[in-house]
Image (cartoon, rainbow, N blue to C red; front, side, top):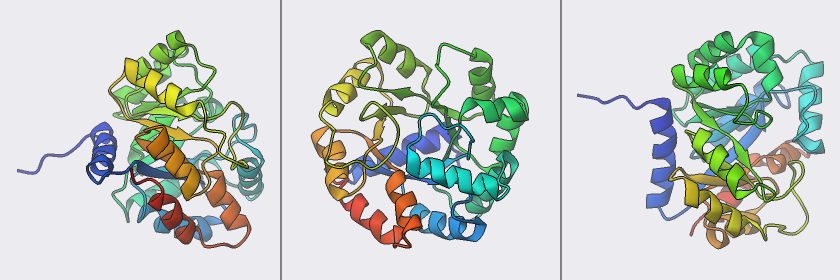
Length: 267
C-alpha cells in the first residue's frame, strides 16, 4: 500500500534526503513570471531539476524585505499584468511536471486581497506545499496561520541576527516547515564578501528551540557563500534568490549557476 505524504512531510523529507547525502538542501528562489511566463517556466524547470525545494515569490508592489534586484523583477511582471491568480497558474504548471516541494513566499497583503480562506484553497489546488510569510509576525493574525494549517500548508517564518532569544523561541514554535534564518540585517540581495559572521550563532540559537530544519538565506550568491552557510554555520538549507534573478537579467545560464552553488552545499 502506498503511503501518501503530507505537504509538510514532503518538505521534511527533502531536507532529510539532502542530509543523508552529506549536504545542505539547495533552495533556489524565483519571482513568479519573471522575465516572462515562458522564461520563468523554463528557468524554474531547470532549477527544480537541481533543487531540493523551490521558492516562488509572489510579485508584490511594496516588498519591503526585498532588495533592488527582486524589486525590479516584481515591478516588471506587475507592469505586464501579473497577479496572485496568475502566480498560482505558474505554480500549477510546474507542479504538473515536478514533485519537488514548492514554497510560496508572499507578503500578507495579497493574502488579504484574495481572502485568506480562498488563498489557502487556491494554493493547495495549485500544488503549493508551504508558505513563507516574511512580514507576518507569528504572534499576529493567528486566523491566517490556522487556515494554512487546516489546508495542510507548512508555515515558515523568519528570524534574524537581531532576534532576541525570546523572539527566536516564538518564531520557531510557529514554524511547521522549516525555520528561515536571515543571514544579515536588511533586504535580500547578493552582497560583496560573505557577511555571514553571525549565522552560526543564529543557527545554534534556533536549534535550541526546535528540531525543524534551519535554512539560511539573504546574501548567498555563489559556491563560497553557500559553503559558508552549509559548512561553517551548519545550516540544513541554503536559500538563493537575487543571484538567479541577476543571472536572468544578464542573460546568463541560471542552471550553470545552480550547479555551482549546489556544489558548495556539501558538508
